[in-house]
Length: 180
Image (cartoon, rainbow, N blue to C red; front, side, top):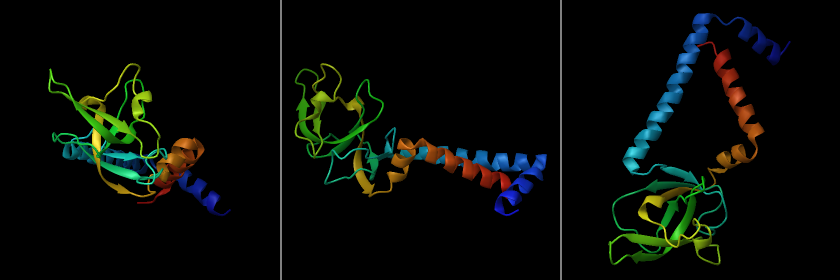
């Protein structure tokens, strides 16, 4: 019958104990990934220690699909640094360069203005209505390193969900039919 017939026979022959063992193994893999993610969050001080560049606004420095590694410290943010920030009302974080740092005289609070390297103007049009500067709580982290093109996997799975479902289904089938 071939590969499909062997797979169907393998699924039919699964015993309850084997199924439970494989379910626990899958649970441990998922839990390990979550623990690693939380440890990275603690180590880097960033709520999202790894992000994917989703647009060409930072070219030629960073291209779409590059993975950025973030770190957030208490050091003051300086002009020229690349930061990842959230804007109120938007779900997806933005990766841009700080072009201006502003300190409020009355509070001493530091605010920043950002711009994409490949954009003509600053980001005030991207900020929330009436917002002219980013405060510290908007900034998720500073870029400290990157891996080129590795993030394309994430982009493809987000833009073409059928690929994500096929991949998850294939991995699930592999877990179910494994004999270990």
